[in-house]
Image (cartoon, rainbow, N blue to C red):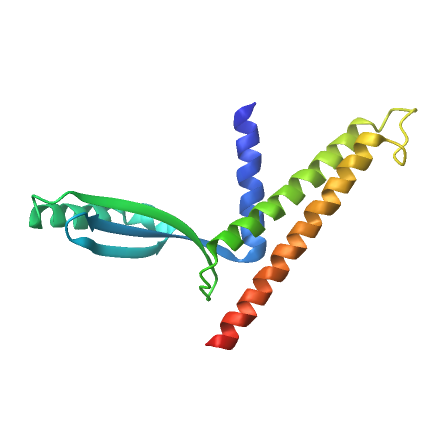
Length: 162
């Protein structure tokens, strides 16, 4: 049962990312405590999986070059809007999450209405659970609109400053 919930969550996330034209990227850094940053890769996530051998090779080369140093690899995923990097990863995450919550709430209301379809005593206008769910859905849609508005304002401000 838990696997189904995770699958649905990932599906909603992917749908929201596709609507927003967001790409998943990863910053992979190889660092040493003694020497600091030794190498950095910025790649789309799908390429990090494909070119993992290059990253491992670079790590091995640096370990051989500095055998006494404690060399580590760090992986930091982030979101990048197609064509434009704005540096607002938290805002992308918030917007994607808000869109996924709206989809989840809409699906829950649809499933609830389908389950009550044959009930003669069901009144859609006076059902307390349904009204609460609709109010929450309205709030979640408002959160999406606010997040989108914030993103547009930041984007316009970033373009204006360039």
